[in-house]
Length: 240
Image (cartoon, rainbow, N blue to C red; front, side):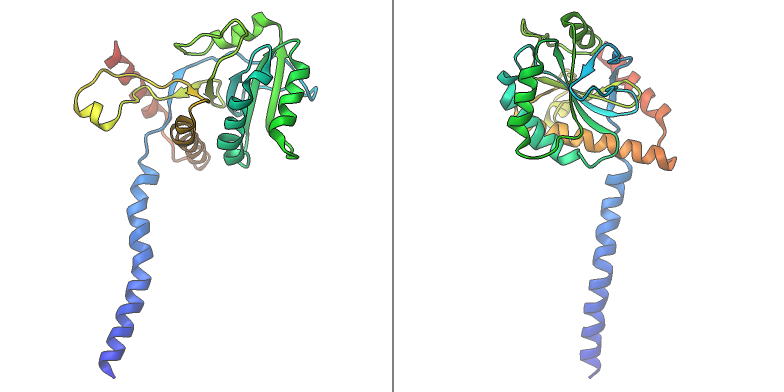
């Protein structure tokens, strides 16, 4: 009888402490993550742009994924589909999240076609197309930190993360563990290629998750932005 009682208590003890132990292992990873770094400040706002819904679309106070699909956005169906399935569907429930596609005037009709192509009877409430003169499109892109250029169609496969304070986010140091151990030169990741499914699914999704965690901690008063900024500047100094 005593042996049965000991076995029963042992099993109950394991069932009780196993989840607690698991949570203790998770705790450092959720509280000691590296915040997503600022790679450019003062991204240009969208004051001179109009939207298909006639609403005023702004970057300020939103967490934005910014894309440039050019004069013929239907040529970017693959990019748009990846963005919708791998990013929009995953993060559309988060507060203040939006995807904004910047287009030149004249692309309105194809933008409607593209929306119909990727929506599949779903309301893309937090997906916006905005339009302005080609020069205005180029000016917004020029305010970003990017080693890429818009093509002659004012399009690019690269997409960008913009935070609520109009700062572009990314990775100042995107080296792998092996590259760090081998002391390879530092290189960053300031934008994400939406043709590359692995890059969007792994790197960009992870970076957006980190950014949402940062703002959640800010609301709770647990985030130290001064130390984050100091670390960013130190990494930039190492590159120079």
